[in-house]
Image (cartoon, rainbow, N blue to C red):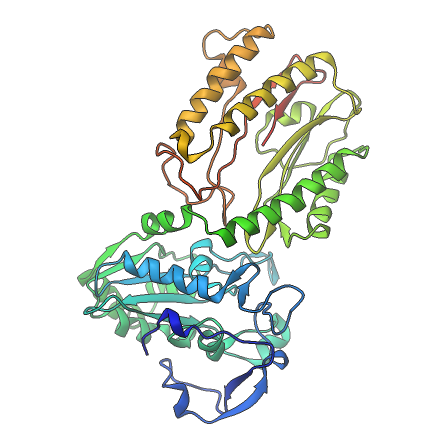
Length: 460
């Protein structure tokens, strides 16, 4: 069945889901009408992620993930397909569950590209978008873990192959454990294959196991198919799509930003004695204010620790008259925010601290004002302006700016793209003029050992 935007299947609070009476469907599902079904309330079913029917306090009707509707995900897949040649196939693999040690696993975080196109937030899944050879249409295949009551008792609910179609709008779904033969038949006649999935002997995902299995019989067929086809990277196409944010994406990022900003304000109103305590409060406050989790490991650095840009030990004491630098942010619906603030632990800047802070603040305000499409500035150009502005300000404060001083005092780029990743759309050029819908950071920085206790000031 060909997928068309006009027939996006969405669950509704009062609707029922048709559930197959048998538990072992073939990898390629037949038309839904050809199967026997029982009527089950959507709210009574269990899925591998929150849905409006099961978590109406988290999602609005029609949303597949917080703030993003099933229709928007379908439109994203259509835009990707429109950029592919006819008869081409795009293959994306979900993230794998990573383990800290033995059976102890880290919090799962979905691959941003896979999430952007599917909204599916479980591991061990593969999405395939195959474009028609004769018309501007495509088929969305989604291979996922099947329902398994014993596994779900230990690991939590899975959405399963039926929900891949009924909830996530796949045209065809299948068991991820049987993807070998299924993927071979899909890509066998493809003119081009687009994928960024890298085979690795250390990987355990079903997709990459196709390439790393010790049994030649499991890999030879697909390897030959890929050898005969043209395999191209998908990254540049997805970067082009993800770099321009929709209104819904921007709304999610504003929500994360507001919640995170309130957390910073609440933190600065209190006195802290250790980096660890401030770290703990911010991570709690992000969630308390409405975020799902922290967007990344926070940097909470006092005094000279702040001269290490990615200092994440966060285990030192906060001394009087020191500056504390906090680089942290919350995440909402997988969209993140990236905030940095610097303030005095005593509540009052010393004169040298205030002078340097004002120089950084003025640079940030100047650069932020240039982040608009009609100014025709690129991130690289705004970075150059930041260097010029900061160098002039530091010279006036008495800093020796001769030689390579600026690179030492301001060692990183002013900004980066932001969205589903902290550094969004990796590899995207910062030389192109900014466009409407792009989201970027602005983060001037300077470090000085002349400050009390040594330290750095960074604002983002």
